[in-house]
Length: 338
Image 1 (cartoon, helix red, strand yellow):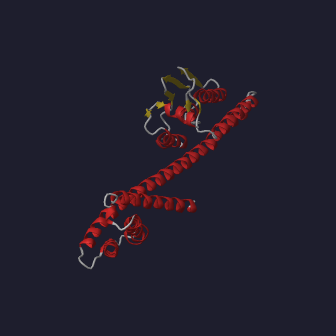
Image 2: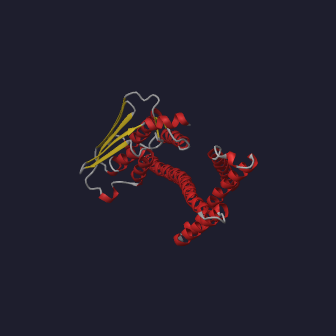
Image 3: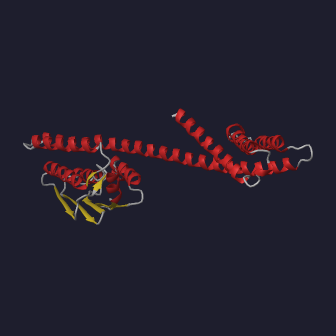
């Protein structure tokens, strides 16, 4: 990486020197007859190019890193003016007068300023690219961390369901274990992907609800409705399940009374409208009403769909509602690009 960086710097500066040399030669082409020979003309113009680039190189590779970047602005200004004046004297001095020195001095100030503008512009672009890569890496690391947290959280809730059935000595326990196995297989496979088909994600939720329905028996009425065309729509995996788990945990699982859970997923164009409404006992402590899953899903939504989602949560005394809208167009583009 370091070798590549230095090679790029070398190529850029060689190209800059060639460009400056060509401009000097073309700029003085009209007055080339004043020189004794074409050779003398080219040598003089190349000398100008060397003088210009010498000041620019001294400024870029010595003065800026050792003085300007260390906030020694006074010394930086003194040494820069000194370097420009010294170069002007060596190139423009004539025993007859100092006019050549003055002209060269102001000309080098102009060219050095132009070179500084190009230098700081390039450095700003590189700095922005570096920050963009850093932010992207941090975002990927955080998403990976959040996604990995979903696995044990979901498994913990599912094992609780099986444990409850086993204590009841339910004959459906083996079937439920198999269902859990299929759910975990989907979860492990989907966790390796950026997006999955929305149809598959909703089927996963449906299977999870069937598993919970067997455990809760007649204590909970569950409704799950899907409307609209799901084809080609994709979504980040395991993004919706925390809302469903939350409805189970703080609704049906927290009381022996009759409870209800209504879930609907509807599609309009590329926008998913996901709605969860569950009854809940009013005796649940406020501090326990939202678990780790909802905290994670909020952060994932902000990272994955920063400007294309709306999440509304209405926590009432006997009812908990979640209304989520996500424009899944971005997920379609991600799949096409990959």
